[in-house]
Length: 236
Image 1 (cartoon, rainbow, N blue to C red):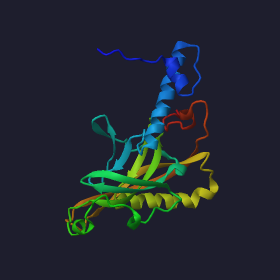
Image 2: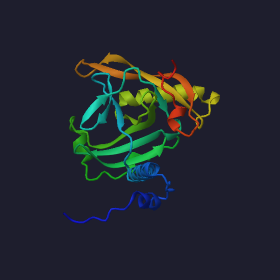
Image 3: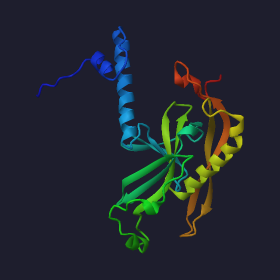
Image 4: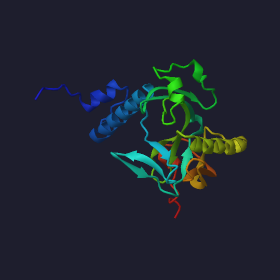
């Protein structure tokens, strides 16, 4: 086996700009925290995310996220706290089933004109003539949310028009209430239900998400951030 130079926990923490506690257990936790923060920063810088993606399935009405090699379902009565200031608009360029380019802007900024973006070798005319072709640029949104029951953080995606319309309605509902709250200290909490309609193409049932604003909740950072977002079962 090749010998590897493995830094100590104290060296890891120092390299990442953190303070090294004298207690060995605290030092280990400090190193893990510093490493997690650094990895999250690298992911964000390179277009990735340290949070799993939530998606709404228009065929079943379920909200799911990747959990290991499988997808897990979000609790049907889950309460999600939304970080309004982190909402993003996204343009993704798809080619052969993969995202080859992406542009993200804060929700209050306008997306660039798709006509000004590179097509990465996609034949637009041929794709337009093919009903099965999904290549090209498409618009979506990302809502950063926290499940108040579990404390898990997610990026809620709106990759299709049905979900994107629901996101738009949610943002409209929140804009009407924003004057009464401070989004730097309070977060809207919403639940998810759904409606159904028949598709014009084939007549199959399509599930459409409905986001219901339940309340606004204080999110001022405390020693333990999760204490600022108590679970709905915390009141007994």
